[in-house]
Length: 336
Image 1 (cartoon, rainbow, N blue to C red):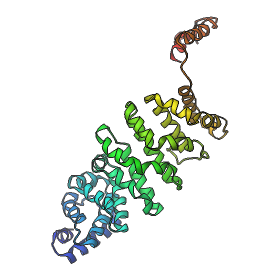
Image 2: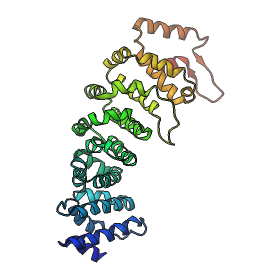
Image 3: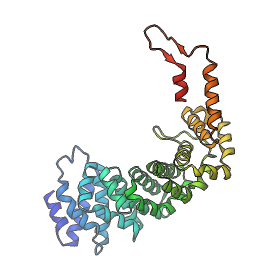
């Protein structure tokens, strides 16, 4: 390891390339157990320096590949690489790509960095979200999936402080809601769901998100054929319904807009879809959406309905089984 470290630090291009190739091969077959004593703190600085060695393009490509292998084998190396400046060096390879191979390797490394909280924050601050989705269509489908997956990790951590980075990405992120590749589309919808959730109490930003592409794409997403998503993931239809709920609750003025755009027949069609009705969570969310679309009852009418419901009960208090607490129907009514 010491000889490899010396090779990376040397000013000799040949020695650097040899050290990078050997280190990359070593890390590609390494595991957390076999690399338990690998000195990340010592290898990170020269590796990051080589990420920007534009005078030696082959060294840059190998350095990016080595970083990707390092993060694959040792995810806990992410904070150290971030601390030594790996993020701006990797993002630069996406914003100004010279070689497609280099950009693909950078996406692989960024995807691993994005899984780590420190990497996520650094990537957002460096414009990583916009960089990941700006040139997505230029890559093979497998790389597109990696890029949008990394973007979904970043969207999970957005805050008001990183709104500028989010806004820069919206023009490129919006078309992905209609992407032809299902897995890319699913992750794109997840990105938007996480963005909407992040600004659920900010009507101005919700309006901006809605006007950036959601208003046109959400109704179409609701007409997709229901599919069974991977375990632990929500389907695009389920996410689209949740996005609509957050938008309408956080920015009520959007309710009328969606009604004018024809959302009501789409929701009605969903409620009549036997496949959709098999999913209790989607049904529950759909009913909540219907509630948001309906105009509020006048206070007098609402109070009258509650009163009639209470009076229709033969007894306001009903004893449950012996030893259980008394249940008040009025208490249930107050909840619903």
